[in-house]
Image 1: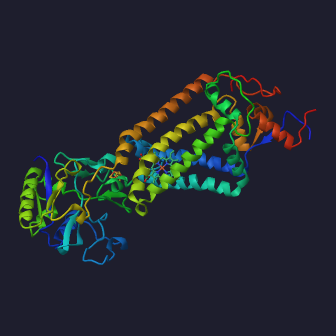
Image 2 (image 1 turned 45 degrees about the vertical axis):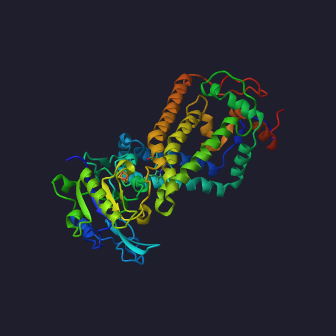
Image 3 (image 1 turned 180 degrees about the vertical axis):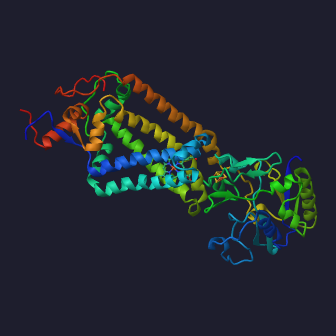
Length: 223
Length: 273
Ligand code: HEM
Ligand code: SF4
């Protein structure tokens, strides 16, 4: 196959894309419906959902989407999940090179980048933070949802954990959402998570190693 | 009136359960209908636990020791603590402290999150799943305001229940304990004088608190203090720091053209994306 500047680099499967979207929406809804219990002065947020009791119900419905969505995606696309697991458990020096320059990137300052793989160091770190954060919120959330069936000490410790994880994880998500949506040139991230693939320009620039691997795999040779 | 208290002398209670009935009557509470609130537990006790429609029960406790078996009757309900864990965790301000020491309950503000029910050292508040409101003994704050005694106290025929200024109740309790000890109940003691900053329900117990299912040293859960006093400000700070940094980056980079161009580089220099 011939090499072309218009080549696409397939990145996310359908299951991952659909679930990323439902996860995004449910996270946002969970945040909004949870915050009135965090600070009472945020109670007006409940007006969006039709009152405190409705917000409570919606928090639970969104929680189910939030938890079972990714579970379903893993069942539907175990290979994609395995790829991510492989990536985040294999750290190379380029990953640390990237992380060391993360703030340069975040604030748009000039910096050199070593060619990155499928996930760069920052994305690997983000996967850990979001992965464990979401698991933590889901676990503590289910515990405080059903306190009557669980030991009191467990319930008591899950309250502060759920309460602390929610704003802290949202803090990480804000950075993640900024880089993916509002950082200059980040439109490409949406192409990947919405359409499934990246352009050659973006892939080669941000994931040079991976782009090369894909080209070789697809037999796209430069003439 | 300064601080008030209800005195429960378990050594005088005969388990007639008039107080249970008076409480239901004054608060206009229906019977418990769910099986778990009415199941037969193998004793004469009416309900296995307090419930959303049952603010007080007489617990029937059989205790066997070297003196043989004793049958204790212990009235259970809200202790109206000074350091009340339920107030600490209630973000909705549905629970608050009245000047006279009563832990006041404002049903209109409650959203039924159940934090109070789980964090109470005595597990007293119960959430009504139908109304999504937490309920508990109010110490009949409206009767007290009108100069009456709580409904349970006014109906007690044996003098096991009393109500009045907290200092006076403590004095009566201490005198009673002295009498009981003279009569040979060496472990008789007052419960609630110092516990949780001093409770506004005070017990005269004939034996150690544990015998009656009461914690010997009740505490506001450490998790609740960490959560409300440190966790929430910390979480809010983390959120605000992230929001501020992200907004700063947004305005800093907004106009920059950092989109990657095709330049067939070999992974060399980049210009800040
Ligand atoms: C499977 C996931 C989750 C479950 C099962 C869950 C469940 C719960 C439950 C049962 C409560 C107690 C209040 C109530 O009864 O409504 C709660 C509170 C809360 N939730 Fe969640 N939740 C989940 C995920 C999240 C996420 C992702 C966020 C935000 C990003 C969040 C934010 C909050 C907040 C802020 C509170 C109030 C904490 C406080 O009172 O200090 N939850 N959640
Ligand atoms: S259940 Fe009601 S009274 Fe109890 S902590 Fe929640 S809002 Fe407050």
